[in-house]
Image (cartoon, rainbow, N blue to C red; front, side, top):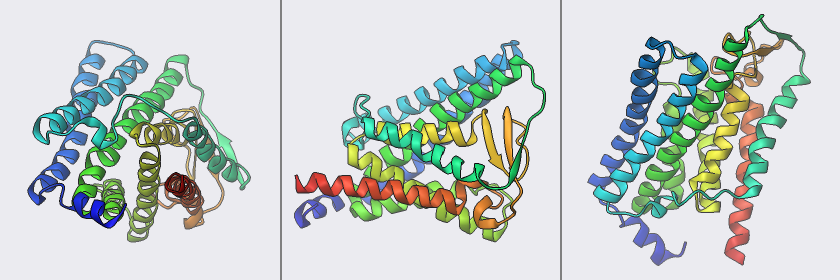
Length: 291
């Protein structure tokens, strides 16, 4: 971005609108979750609908309700087309689909070479289906898409218009990280590690969205990361996961390797993964500038 474009970007949004956009982004995150997971899922549960089905409905409603809120706010209040927030029609580049698969698979593979053991409890088919649909539709498609829609779509681009590219990438990433420790009774060391890892993950998602000009690319990386790392299939940690079909329980208690109280998503192994993918996105952005 040249000097004139940068100045134009920094002057593109008034402070009041920016503050409102930040507040609205967090509010939409909460409202869409309450609507889908609180109200609707509770009603479905009361009606005796199987858990796997209301996980599917809840995850889809979570994504759709957040999208409609963002679209209404962006087009009606901010008077801005969705493309300006990197939210065009669905367009996903194959290289980010590959990255979306490789990142969690390779991080998981590192841990499977560390001392540990597999643990699982006998589960019926309905419980297994509920665990898997919870991981795929709520943690994956739901949370992955909604967080990208708000943090890398609405919020990041609003901050870029006011303060420029660097702040636009970093500030929402810090907020993204901080939301993962709010309400958690973590130690100070765990909070620091979560903030570092969460910010690095946020920067990675931001660079992916900017490189492809679409949050759909960062959403697929985010969604597949959640599905594989914290979904209902196999999880990795220091204790068996009661919401997964199978767990790989690590023998090590190294804080850097286990990620502390948050888990391996904040571990040094994951942070290295975020850095590698971020570097790939930066390299792709530089090639585009040269071309």
